[in-house]
Length: 74
Length: 207
Image 1 (spheres, each protein chain N blue to C red):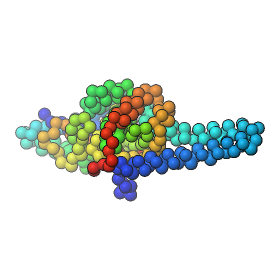
Image 2: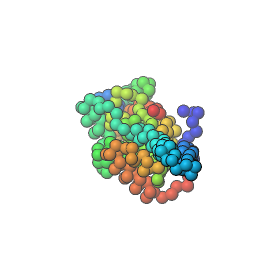
Image 3: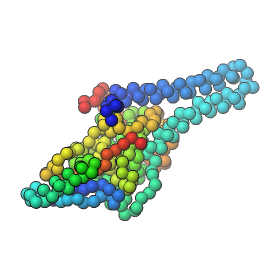
Image 4: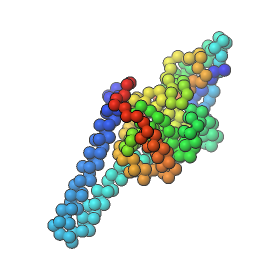
């Protein structure tokens, strides 16, 4: 089961879960994903230690997609 | 930030050298004044001492500003932090996770050097030099570990972009920054320095 989570004030929130074979869950996850992008979040797929990729479409085969806020110089 | 040129190993080294030159420019006049006064009249020793104190103090103040970037910020809700710590732990390897729990800093090896990521800043260790970056997640309500996870993911997905967006607060000798770090963060700097020294020399970045 793949998960879409958002890092927020609660630690993180689970936004959607899907399996690549279940079209309805994929569609719901894709919609949740798009809503977060529209709200200004950035989507990242963690690919193990030291690696992460920013994505603009929900990768159906990813185990975990994390939504994060942009960063800024302090 | 289109107005900032993308950071690479060469530009980073140049900025480090500029900071060193800047430090020397601050120190040399005061040392010169101290030596000159002593040569002119040894009775001016107290004034010479004040000049030497300035020569010591100014770089120390810069280093303190650098070390401050990884100082922990105010604590947030404990339950949110526990949850965030779990996610951050999943992102880190075993050794890095242990080190983060002890020191509050997440260690990450990159192309530019070895990074230590804190809640609102990061240290980039490249040999004997440390670059202190002020950088943060834009959501101020995040628990501390989520702030670190934000910066870690941003760093992993685009290291050069991360170093470009972040503001350089200080670059200088690791020993100078180490003295100004919290005691628990010093261990992380020591580990990062050891890893940085072990890195093979990289003449240029490929990205």
